Image (cartoon, rainbow, N blue to C red; front, side):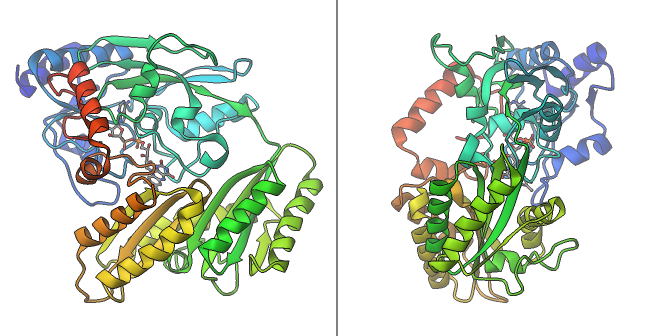
Length: 461
Ligand SMILES: Cc1cc2nc3c(=O)[nH]c(=O)nc-3n(C[C@H](O)[C@H](O)[C@H](O)COP(=O)(O)OP(=O)(O)OC[C@H]3O[C@@H](n4cnc5c(N)ncnc54)[C@H](O)[C@@H]3O)c2cc1C
């Protein structure tokens, strides 16, 4: 059966609302969010239930038709972009099946957008702690498939740490149902962990049981001005030693902030942007005044000992939101630069973040004199988003810069993909830096579960 025949079969069974060749309906699913590339697909399928996903995948497996999976289309490594495969969007699978405050668990379908889970948790007086810049569009299926991280990993871990159970359609159409909310469950291989981070190569995630946590009564947000990344890590250690409530520690260099300040609604936290700025967030479960004095003590002691140059604590919710707005707008600020650039999403042990920043800066200058380095990210968990931007009119070898940065990461015991995954765009680096035995085991797992290469056939390998 060809893709065209499959389309006609599904059109007959499901009707035109769930399957279409209309280019107008396909268009928003084909373009990557930064506009870097446009995909193409014979048709778009939007199943509304696990059974419909199973029917579609089963037909594709039977007739050897490959599928690309898509949730919110916010992925940064092109795994969700079809290049000739049929496109399965989980947009219609958007039910929150249950919120169980007693079990601290929520069961949601894969197409539910993260912001809705956060709201449902809040309504039940609980917290779902995953938080990232794309939370208004990114879906549970995409977040699980990329094992997303975000700003609260320091305290709560990544998506894998926040998941108790899973439901998925395997590449032959069978359904695995394991939507438990158990904290203790040692019954054989952990298929949930296998599917999380598999980037849609081993199954279509259709629903998941996610962990909820006690809801803080508030949060305190502060910005600290710093001279060096070494000072940032010293401040991080001090904050962790003095307070058990640190929930985010983000670091931004001067260049990353400079390109963002001109954007509407963005305010500078300091009159002069320092070489490095840290954003600290503390959750509050007790008295507000007690917490404020604890944080002011940490910051005052850090100023006194020369670890930080200056600090400002948000006194209102609006001020706290403005601090976060600056941090979350950085990627948009950098998009406006318009000169050739190359991005990296890497992690190193936290203690080696300063060395990474120093050596990366030297490498970039050596390979492309005058180039700028944008560095920001979740320093509290060792994750840096690093972009090199060419100087006006200068020669700029993106591949050479990336290889140098990734060699450095490998030398420091880090990872060439901290939270965005491998997708299609990081495949060469994945195969180059990952332990060959680990890659061979992964290929065996893929071959065992998806021998015909039906699901996301261009992703990972
Ligand atoms: C502004 C911005 C900020 C971001 N910040 C962060 C951040 O801080 N931390 C972070 O980790 N990421 C971040 N991201 C990346 C992105 O949001 C995440 O990768 C997110 O997990 C993708 O979710 P999605 O629903 O958009 O998935 P998509 O982009 O649609 O898909 C991503 C991958 O998952 C697969 N997939 C989608 N749904 C399913 C499913 N149901 N079953 C199996 N596979 C599936 C796709 O095939 C693809 O390989 C950011 C992105 C943007 C645009």
